[in-house]
Length: 496
Ligand SMILES: Cc1cc2nc3c(=O)[nH]c(=O)nc-3n(C[C@H](O)[C@H](O)[C@H](O)COP(=O)(O)OP(=O)(O)OC[C@H]3O[C@@H](n4cnc5c(N)ncnc54)[C@H](O)[C@@H]3O)c2cc1C
Image 1 (tube, helix red, strand yellow):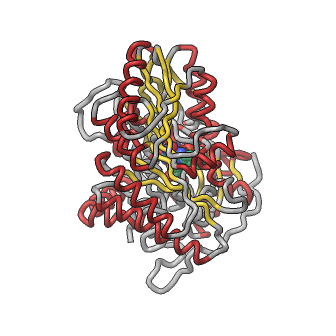
Image 2 (cartoon, rainbow, N blue to C red):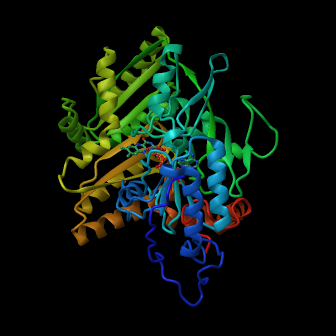
């Protein structure tokens, strides 16, 4: 049996005060601030250590790696990290934590951008690294069943020989558990949808340790509440996902794509709007503003024209991709864009899309020593050009470095604010820009996040987006499923 390493308990992150629960009482973590009580944590960790031995880590570096590392939110490490290898082990971890009122924070690849994996009240991070098996591929039904630790690239490498693929592609090689939990998307969403459209069923552990299955493999079902979609995007706050059934797609017979420069971001957005409105079934249509193109050229050693650029891809039969490309070319020409340059070789296309996926790192490299803060909003497509153009003007007026990229076919775009965090005035200007960005998107009937999720960073915008009635319903759901608030507390909605 492994010996429990000496546990260093930290001070509660927020000191207990008169109106807060005394240590030892079981209050809602994150509402009246039940910081995990050191008295509760110690026996919980002792039990987990007995069960998991060296698969439980208390090492400070490991704990820090399991908290937020991607953005400007503080790194708030969990008290321990545990590596289960089966759903039964996940159940046992949740049961131990529930018995002691200790928070549980599921962890996939840690690439989320809004502080989702932070542990503001401490607790135990469940890392799905070792639950990375593809359990079944049902080629005839175009679906597969995976454990949550499988990453999107691993799944596609596994599927390639069968002529199938899974299309959702966030820039990072994220885990399918994390992708499900953040309801993420990527460059292919305009054609294939987001995680909300591609998850058929889930197995998940509830806060009391019970295992549920949300649906069968049938493509359609009207059998009761749609718990699959409730858990997709719940960011680990309602249940811990242990198995995911995903829709798959056939690798298209033909893929064509290329790049098309435009005189302005507005013209590129107008071309996107026209492409979508005329029903061209484009598979990818991505905007890079001139600064982002410059960054990508330098980072990925490319020679793209340093003007607002659309990167496109069309999927279908040989004939249909030629037809789609021709129709797009006409739209682009009408808006002053072009020439539309085809990337005929598969290697050239892969290089282009890898460069697009590396846009965040390319932006960061624009300013050595700076921090890149990636944020996203999404608006109805008819408002896209207006929203992106106003945001670009705001960036200039705010004297900030913030290249724009976007999955613009969905009305979704991102800013990567490249900031000198030591410059308080610059940070204040960046905060102001982000507030106005969200306000602008909401004024256009959009959302404060199209795909990165809420985590800690966007909690403050939910009252404006949803209103108190809707937030009240979300709170009721949360408390019904997790009455102790042990599942990823302090994320999405405040219970206080
Ligand atoms: C360079 C870069 C580019 C990116 N590009 C995109 C993009 O194009 N589109 C996009 O949508 N996102 C993008 N992201 C954000 C990120 O990749 C996604 O949010 C992704 O879905 C996170 O997956 P993950 O495995 O890293 O999850 P993590 O960061 O580990 O976790 C995210 C959330 O999911 C929860 N979670 C993880 N596993 C489980 C589980 N098994 N059960 C329950 N909850 C769980 C966690 O508790 C946390 O709340 C990008 C990030 C980076 C760094």
